[in-house]
Image (tube, rainbow, N blue to C red; front, side, top):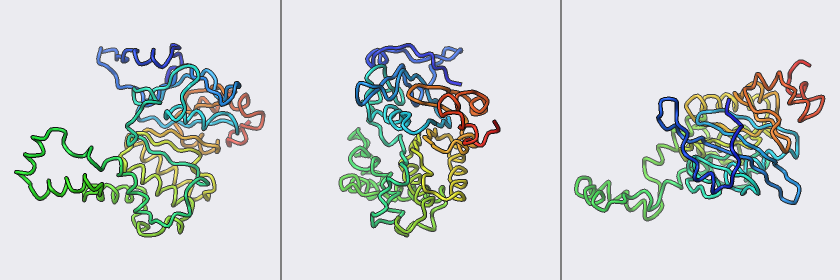
Length: 304
């Protein structure tokens, strides 16, 4: 379980914080998400108050809480879309509000917010995940390396330069797109319009878009809203498989039963953190009743 006893301080103070070291004296990798005493409110009343938590690489974490508990606000603070009023938020070791390596993050929104009217195919949706990887940033920074490439493989190098200048996807990019479609079981739907898919199929397409971007962190905001029960089970099987491959999963979910069944760690929020720890300990705790009310255990499918 990750420690929540994080020293308070401003964002500037966190930038000066030394890297955590292992017992062997070797620097450990930075947490994917690190919140220290974070408070935020859209008005004078805090929506999120004094929240400290970390998410390490490879974790499968679910954030749960009643409606209006601050779950989506917490997600925006984690991703740097909002800046804390108090405390500090870090993302992959950088201040979250200054983080500019967006291809490391894949985001899947609620089904209701998907642009279901867009007349584009599944493959076109998934290829959007490659856009952060195309353009001039793909060219070597060292001109000598580029010249060596022109001498050794003039046609391939010229094509790569042309693709970078035009922003077109290369054959390698399309291979990544096809691999992402295969991973989520959507290869057979690649040429179908996104509007023709079921809710579960659309969510798989959006996950494929995140995979095509080669994201390290997959953030999902109540992704099974409006999705049929059979598709929900397949959806969570897919998340488990992706997590087993090393992708960090951060899930905001209203379905307590699904969280109890699938997540490894639960953060229970209602403005402040009521619980942060392993799922089985969450089930045995009183956090459900304190955060949700007396009927919450039955909502989670847990015996009272």
